[in-house]
Image (cartoon, rainbow, N blue to C red; front, side, top):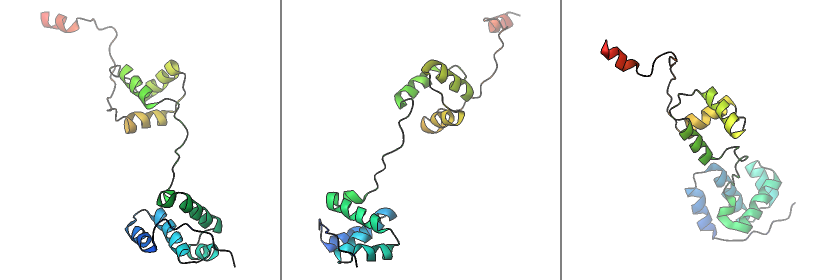
Length: 157
């Protein structure tokens, strides 16, 4: 069969079992189970068969355990691509458009004109409504022919 990998025993098997039982994340729990099997002396191929995983995955988990211990088993989300406009810049945009009664389409055009960045309607909607919690205000049409002092003119009559 396959050769047994060298596993560094950062903690005792009892402590490892306690960690396994108290863990709530299923991905980390599965990885801890693989390390427990390695502690017990099983080889990579047996563990891969038990957990229904590829041998390479078990070897990868064991090497991460050897390097970093428990922290090496936590999923490392490295995120996605960098945003075109930073969060601080979106705060500035929100301040600039605050009382202008702009629709999402208007904001898309505004961002394209002022920042030279092309965003889709859906993306701008998500940033404004979900991430930045900008309240929805329905724009209303202003009459351009209306005089500036229309309210005072109405009161005089």
